[in-house]
Length: 180
Image 1 (cartoon, helix red, strand yellow):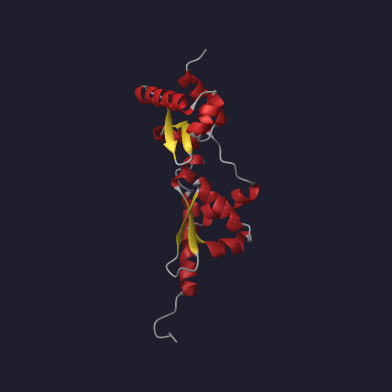
Image 2 (cartoon, rainbow, N blue to C red):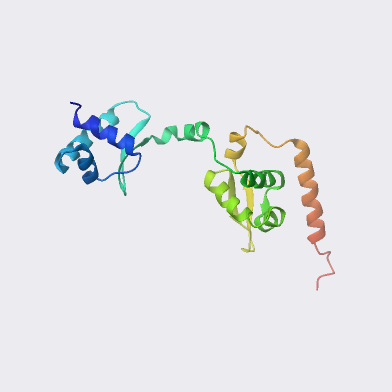
Protein backbone atom coordinates (compact mmCIF):
# COMPACT_ATOMS: atom_id res chain seq x y z
CA UNK A 1 0.00 0.00 0.00
CA UNK A 2 1.45 3.41 -0.93
CA UNK A 3 2.28 5.80 1.87
CA UNK A 4 -0.34 8.47 2.56
CA UNK A 5 1.88 11.33 1.33
CA UNK A 6 2.13 9.64 -2.08
CA UNK A 7 -1.64 9.12 -2.19
CA UNK A 8 -2.20 12.81 -1.41
CA UNK A 9 0.33 13.74 -4.12
CA UNK A 10 -1.63 11.64 -6.63
CA UNK A 11 -4.92 13.23 -5.54
CA UNK A 12 -3.54 16.77 -5.91
CA UNK A 13 -2.08 15.88 -9.31
CA UNK A 14 -5.27 14.27 -10.62
CA UNK A 15 -7.68 16.93 -9.30
CA UNK A 16 -5.48 19.77 -10.64
CA UNK A 17 -7.15 22.31 -8.34
CA UNK A 18 -6.80 23.44 -4.72
CA UNK A 19 -8.31 21.04 -2.17
CA UNK A 20 -9.11 21.51 1.52
CA UNK A 21 -7.84 19.15 4.23
CA UNK A 22 -11.38 17.72 4.49
CA UNK A 23 -11.47 17.00 0.75
CA UNK A 24 -8.01 15.41 0.84
CA UNK A 25 -9.08 13.22 3.79
CA UNK A 26 -12.26 12.17 1.99
CA UNK A 27 -10.47 11.26 -1.27
CA UNK A 28 -7.64 9.49 0.59
CA UNK A 29 -10.07 7.58 2.82
CA UNK A 30 -8.53 8.78 6.09
CA UNK A 31 -9.32 11.20 8.91
CA UNK A 32 -8.39 14.90 8.84
CA UNK A 33 -5.45 14.48 11.24
CA UNK A 34 -3.88 11.76 9.08
CA UNK A 35 -4.47 13.89 5.97
CA UNK A 36 -2.74 16.87 7.64
CA UNK A 37 0.24 14.68 8.59
CA UNK A 38 0.46 13.20 5.09
CA UNK A 39 0.23 16.67 3.55
CA UNK A 40 2.98 18.01 5.84
CA UNK A 41 5.18 15.06 4.89
CA UNK A 42 4.53 15.71 1.20
CA UNK A 43 5.25 19.44 1.57
CA UNK A 44 8.49 18.61 3.39
CA UNK A 45 9.46 16.15 0.62
CA UNK A 46 8.95 18.81 -2.05
CA UNK A 47 10.76 21.39 0.07
CA UNK A 48 13.89 19.24 0.19
CA UNK A 49 14.05 18.03 -3.39
CA UNK A 50 15.12 19.91 -6.48
CA UNK A 51 11.78 19.68 -8.27
CA UNK A 52 9.86 21.76 -10.78
CA UNK A 53 6.72 21.18 -8.69
CA UNK A 54 5.70 22.35 -5.24
CA UNK A 55 2.78 21.94 -2.85
CA UNK A 56 1.40 25.30 -1.76
CA UNK A 57 -1.43 26.55 0.40
CA UNK A 58 -3.78 28.89 -1.42
CA UNK A 59 -6.91 30.66 -0.15
CA UNK A 60 -8.95 27.78 -1.63
CA UNK A 61 -6.85 24.92 -0.25
CA UNK A 62 -3.68 23.01 -1.07
CA UNK A 63 -2.42 22.66 -4.61
CA UNK A 64 0.34 20.89 -6.54
CA UNK A 65 1.71 23.42 -8.98
CA UNK A 66 4.68 24.40 -11.10
CA UNK A 67 7.29 26.47 -9.25
CA UNK A 68 7.38 30.15 -10.22
CA UNK A 69 10.86 29.78 -11.72
CA UNK A 70 9.42 27.47 -14.40
CA UNK A 71 6.47 29.66 -15.43
CA UNK A 72 8.27 30.79 -18.59
CA UNK A 73 7.92 27.23 -19.90
CA UNK A 74 4.14 27.49 -19.71
CA UNK A 75 4.19 30.33 -22.22
CA UNK A 76 6.64 28.51 -24.47
CA UNK A 77 5.12 25.04 -24.41
CA UNK A 78 1.40 25.75 -24.15
CA UNK A 79 0.20 27.56 -27.26
CA UNK A 80 -2.13 30.50 -27.01
CA UNK A 81 -5.70 29.78 -27.99
CA UNK A 82 -6.71 32.70 -30.20
CA UNK A 83 -9.52 32.81 -32.74
CA UNK A 84 -9.20 34.32 -36.19
CA UNK A 85 -10.86 37.60 -35.12
CA UNK A 86 -8.54 38.03 -32.15
CA UNK A 87 -5.51 37.25 -34.35
CA UNK A 88 -6.62 39.87 -36.87
CA UNK A 89 -7.10 42.40 -34.09
CA UNK A 90 -3.66 41.50 -32.74
CA UNK A 91 -2.18 42.02 -36.22
CA UNK A 92 -3.84 45.44 -36.46
CA UNK A 93 -2.41 46.41 -33.05
CA UNK A 94 1.05 45.16 -34.04
CA UNK A 95 1.02 47.08 -37.30
CA UNK A 96 -0.60 50.29 -36.06
CA UNK A 97 0.19 50.30 -32.33
CA UNK A 98 0.26 51.97 -30.04
CA UNK A 99 -3.27 52.67 -31.18
CA UNK A 100 -6.25 54.21 -29.42
CA UNK A 101 -8.81 51.53 -28.60
CA UNK A 102 -11.54 53.68 -30.16
CA UNK A 103 -9.57 53.80 -33.42
CA UNK A 104 -9.05 50.03 -33.23
CA UNK A 105 -12.82 49.53 -32.86
CA UNK A 106 -13.37 51.73 -35.93
CA UNK A 107 -10.94 49.50 -37.84
CA UNK A 108 -12.08 46.10 -36.55
CA UNK A 109 -15.64 46.60 -35.29
CA UNK A 110 -17.15 46.31 -31.83
CA UNK A 111 -15.79 42.76 -31.41
CA UNK A 112 -12.39 44.37 -30.89
CA UNK A 113 -13.36 45.20 -27.29
CA UNK A 114 -13.61 41.47 -26.49
CA UNK A 115 -10.49 40.70 -28.53
CA UNK A 116 -8.46 43.29 -26.61
CA UNK A 117 -9.65 41.86 -23.29
CA UNK A 118 -8.66 38.35 -24.42
CA UNK A 119 -5.28 39.56 -25.74
CA UNK A 120 -4.55 41.38 -22.46
CA UNK A 121 -5.39 38.21 -20.51
CA UNK A 122 -3.07 36.19 -22.74
CA UNK A 123 -0.31 38.77 -22.23
CA UNK A 124 0.07 39.76 -25.89
CA UNK A 125 -1.31 43.27 -25.47
CA UNK A 126 -1.02 46.03 -22.86
CA UNK A 127 -3.62 48.75 -22.26
CA UNK A 128 -3.00 52.13 -20.66
CA UNK A 129 -5.38 55.04 -20.22
CA UNK A 130 -4.94 58.06 -22.46
CA UNK A 131 -4.23 61.31 -20.66
CA UNK A 132 -7.78 62.55 -21.37
CA UNK A 133 -9.10 59.36 -19.70
CA UNK A 134 -11.69 58.66 -22.40
CA UNK A 135 -9.97 55.80 -24.20
CA UNK A 136 -6.97 53.54 -23.81
CA UNK A 137 -3.80 53.10 -25.80
CA UNK A 138 -3.30 49.50 -26.89
CA UNK A 139 0.07 48.06 -27.88
CA UNK A 140 1.79 44.70 -28.18
CA UNK A 141 4.01 43.41 -25.37
CA UNK A 142 7.39 41.69 -25.29
CA UNK A 143 5.52 38.39 -25.01
CA UNK A 144 3.99 39.07 -28.44
CA UNK A 145 7.47 39.48 -29.95
CA UNK A 146 8.82 36.41 -28.16
CA UNK A 147 5.81 34.19 -28.89
CA UNK A 148 5.68 35.03 -32.57
CA UNK A 149 9.49 35.09 -32.70
CA UNK A 150 9.69 38.67 -33.86
CA UNK A 151 12.55 40.78 -32.56
CA UNK A 152 10.87 43.83 -34.01
CA UNK A 153 8.54 44.65 -36.83
CA UNK A 154 10.30 45.22 -40.16
CA UNK A 155 11.87 48.66 -40.53
CA UNK A 156 9.65 49.54 -43.49
CA UNK A 157 6.53 49.11 -41.36
CA UNK A 158 8.08 51.32 -38.69
CA UNK A 159 8.76 54.02 -41.30
CA UNK A 160 5.17 53.81 -42.57
CA UNK A 161 3.83 53.97 -39.02
CA UNK A 162 5.95 57.02 -38.21
CA UNK A 163 4.83 58.80 -41.39
CA UNK A 164 1.16 58.09 -40.54
CA UNK A 165 1.63 59.40 -36.99
CA UNK A 166 3.26 62.60 -38.28
CA UNK A 167 0.44 63.08 -40.79
CA UNK A 168 -2.17 62.53 -38.05
CA UNK A 169 -0.42 65.07 -35.80
CA UNK A 170 -0.40 67.64 -38.63
CA UNK A 171 -4.14 67.12 -39.20
CA UNK A 172 -4.97 67.47 -35.51
CA UNK A 173 -2.70 70.40 -34.65
CA UNK A 174 -3.98 73.97 -34.65
CA UNK A 175 -1.49 76.55 -35.98
CA UNK A 176 -0.54 79.31 -33.55
CA UNK A 177 -2.71 82.40 -33.85
CA UNK A 178 -5.69 80.40 -35.14
CA UNK A 179 -6.95 79.24 -31.76
CA UNK A 180 -10.59 80.03 -31.11
